[in-house]
Length: 248
Image (cartoon, rainbow, N blue to C red; front, side, top):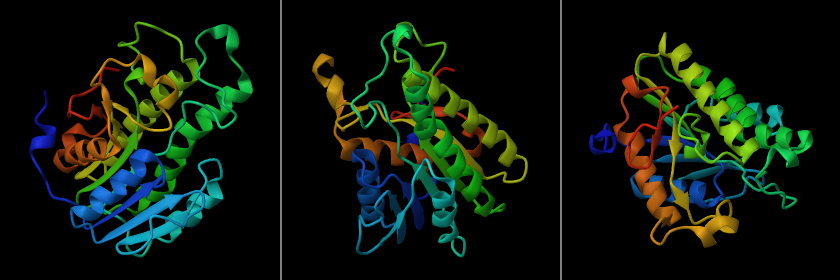
């Protein structure tokens, strides 16, 4: 196990969570507040919650770049020290689940999965990374998944989801390399939260081994610990909830 999460480099005074009403996103917001974060931009499609001190709700749509730009513009005067993209999809809103065979591939469904899991987070990075300071530590992180690993794929299936997360991981690596040339203290990384008790995992929980399912509050605590200890040298990696590097 890595010692990433054991070396706390300091909790942020401000943060932004894109996807604040999902199971993990809301838990991240609550944990950040509990750790003394003074300003938390909480983004969701409706843009209403969490609310109250220290939350500042905003609306955005992962599939609508102008809404992302408008949301980021509200942070321009005082950019958050940490940015976490907690949105993602495994089963589409119409109930379409991950494809177990290539015979079920649909270009429309693939495009929607990539729009949410890959393109949306990339557009958030496009608009918010330019606001990050060059002389201070900052964190940009997006939730990824172990199944996005190419070398660790021994089962196949779940084609669009796996491919969208693998593509996200590559983009995070690219962003880390690019911004690392000018922002030496910045950290850009992917996070694998484990299997969390959420709407995303609910259809697949019946086959999980006992003890594998993690509560959202515990997952948030784990992920924030990883981010608190992440060093610039780890920028571009995908770390799991224990702070271990996932294979490409």
